Amino acid sequence: MKRVHVALVPGFFGFANLGDLAYFGHVHAFLQDAYRARGFEPVLHIVKTHPTASIVRRAVRLLDTLATDAAGDAPIHLVGHSSGGLDCRLLLVPGVELPGPHPVEPVAARVTRVVTVATPHRGTPLAEFFATRLGGALLEILSLATMHGLRLGQVPLKVVLAAGAAYAKLDDLGPNSALLDQLFRDLLADFTPARREAITQFLNDVRSDRALLTQLTPDAMEPFEATTRDRPGVPYAAVVTRALPPTLASWTMPGLDPSAHVLHLLYRALHAATRDSHARLPALDPAAVLRLRTAYDTLPDPTDNDGVVPTLSQLHGEIICATAGDHLDVIGHFGDHSVVPPHFDWLVTGSGFDRARFDGVWTAVADWLTAARPASGAGSAGSRP
Image (cartoon, rainbow, N blue to C red; front, side, top):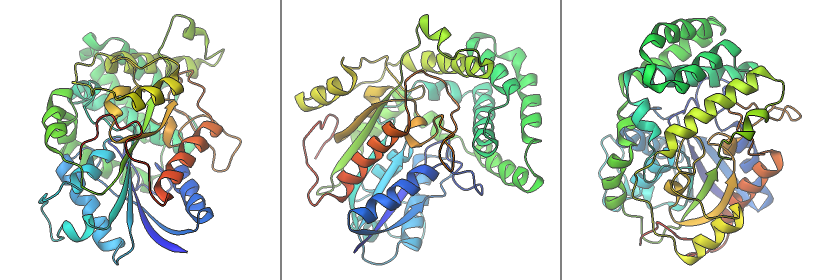
């Protein structure tokens, strides 16, 4: 079997390293089996990246991981979710210089494939809100609530009620700051002392460096997109996500579950904050238009998004999969308690994302990563030589 290293790079919800809080847990298990079924011996690495540090610092962490844990001459595949895809791109820029003890070129020269998943290549308006003081506090609550859901199987109703109310009244966040502080303390208290210590350190890291959030705004990403050249000879591919836009009818979609109704309210507010995009979006070539129309029936417009990132901001390289789902659905955080470990959802969008759709996304990724010669040019909107 052919040995290959596969680096999974988390985005700014990147709590990948807190014990059994598995950001990439379902993806890791799927790819492990998928590579072996295709005749490869995979060595998977989940990069312990700083969640909200600058793209440069995050790329250095990716470089350090590969230089130390993936030593040798076996090829390397990169899979980056959300802003993790930007870390992958920066690492591979020809001639890039990154601080630290490890030279870039010996590692970058071994990378043979790159997949970005729901990555904000042209930024996201949501970053502009999260970069504010109160937006940062709400991001901490959302991160902590997501950890709670992954660990204990549910997001506490009191948390989603307060977070949803805060998002629903973005112009009136001031009075909610004390409430958010209290919710933070209450939510953290639900964890064991050892886990509280790990989470507190994680969130201290977030508070100490939030450079990523200002870098992910559409205006800030414009120079990144203009100057970050793809590595010659390395194919790039994208997984694109679009959640079902909220409608008047979607109010009834969660049924009688009060928690689901609040999570849907939260999604509506996230979607509204993300849809106000002024990013310079890519011109679509005919292959990209065909792929997107086939997936969604209609071509996505600049307001379509997955609750975090505009759909058209996610295009870079070949589109290998376009799916209906939210930003975390695509990496396995959707509602399905019938499998072990179970899938836990933290946004209710009505997009219908399920295990079959998850398997379809990651089968497409595995097929492309392990193909003898990945196709080039098919749905290649946003790519450059």
